[in-house]
Length: 532
Image (spheres, rainbow, N blue to C red):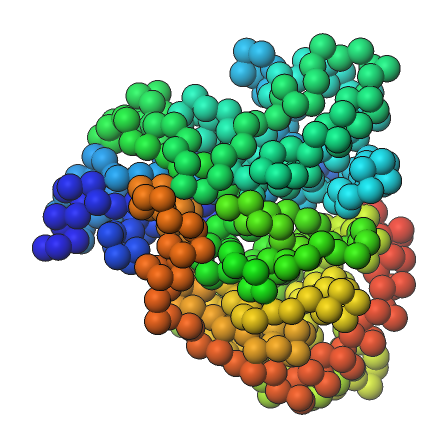
């Protein structure tokens, strides 16, 4: 009855996150506990060599997700969901979404997954003396300038996926500072003025009618009001027309920021690892890095604190593909096993593997990886004739491969920069099977890793918390999370096992040497060679 009354009195917050493979919604109560949730499966497409999502899929997915959430509320509490206390929108960071003065999309959405901006990334990094990764929005924009793409002259607005959805729901062209920090470098709570000037100078000869500062979203910090749901926005979200307008929205954030919030990793010397379609680690820094590293981004927490981010484009996609194959085998054999049970069984099998993974090798590259200098994706599995090709070794190899690229950046932070990490939390699909992904991640960091019960659904819950924080008063985000949301909650922690540390060390030796094989695969296995 308390939950039912909270829904009736709008003492709730709704978080929606558009992830790489699912759109997720979580409704939380005054105690920050999920009281209803839903999801919608979707998938990016590779069209003309570009990873993209059609914007029509965004809205059909959001409407289906909200409809399922409303059904969950109806079934649990007998209430038609017509309003909530606050809303937050989150999505994949980075990428390229550009619109003209009439609000028309100029080119298909280019997601973070694309590795087509190498030249722009290198030039901007050198000019700014600040690492600009290929997936950042400003790298995509400058690459379009370098390519002489005709649409560039017509740009009136550039944003992220979260910023786009928020704009359509509220009419406000704004971003949370964490998401904005993956578009263009941040300094003192706003876009870096020196770099803004440098970029305008860089493109001056093109004589565009716009300046970069005029087409970027405005920036808001966590806790600030970012507008209200308009009547048009309510119809976009709820096809049944039950949802009322006027609901306040918090600043839209990227999945990195919501991951930090969902793991209480927004204070200095805290960190988190998000492992799903992509994998990234984020450490809130005490001091600036001593130099520019191409393997490390500098972004911010949702409250503006600097964060060192190691981002890899590939994590679980290759594992998912193999487990789908095993599922097909079970189907034709007549065996009955749920998808969750199959994942658990295969993940737990990896704990029985040989220390050297039987000499097996895997690259999980569905798309390119800038950290290792691989331009395109070629998922690859290799072994010697005398390798111990067992199921346990196979699964551990896949799991190690999903984390291997991350190791290069982590070593820079912990060994070269001597970054101190008091706590490290994991979240995302890789951690859903208890004690497996978490155990291997502890081996990578050679440090204890904790996982909360909400590990699999962190992002949508994280943005719901930010929506709730907007209504909480004047306290800091760090205090709000530590004293209200996570008080007394530490999660289940696993210390690194020396045997796992040694197992991963052996795998990394083989992996580093095997990168030559992956490069040859990119050069010689071309799209179209196998098409009829």
